[in-house]
Amino acid sequence: MKLRRCVIVGAALGIALVAGAWHRGNGLVIGRLQYEGGGDWYANSSSLPNLIRAIRTRTTLAVDAREQRITLMDERLWETPFLHLTGHGTVTFSDAEAARLRQWLERGGFLHADDNYGLDASFRTAMAKVFPDRAFVDVPLAHPIYHAVYEFPNGIPKIHEHDGKPARGFGIFIGDRLAVYYSYESDLGNGWEDVGTYPADPPELHEQALRMGVNLFAYAVTSRP
Image (cartoon, rainbow, N blue to C red; front, side, top):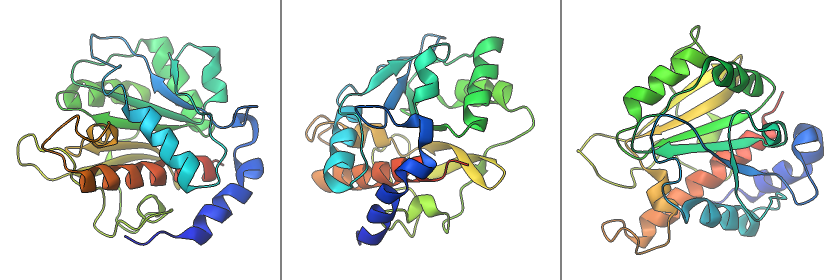
């Protein structure tokens, strides 16, 4: 895959314009969403630290070195441009949480949900509560999220095998902006974990997962309305 250095530089120069209130003293924050329902929101403990390290070393985007664990009712939400949601079990949002998530997304927040296998049904139900007027659609292969820094002409890579289904990238759009990206049957989080955590996933898949993660974050912080 070819690294698009010009886009990295362009993204970095645009931080002050597009990140605005997102930017804090230590840099742009990546948050891990702590949700209710019984799902293991804390899964893949080394995933976000490795992704953050990749963003900090491969781009000039100013990113906080630590992940933040955030609930939807946490006031820090408004200073967080990128939320990551994962797990194997059930996710639920209260009415207040659903309204708050929608408001945050409409203000320019970006949610990446990664089905760690078993989350699909409850996550779709939860998001229908957030956006009863919008459905998940396949993100087109021409979308910038597959070309922001690294090239993924065939879309999201398949990282971890569960049941033979192809990896798919679903999205919810607000106008022209992709606000929610749902990686399904890919398991990017497994790929972000330390090499060797999952022996079935070789280092080259770890690298592909990190590259896709860099794209997700670069798009998220440079597409805010």
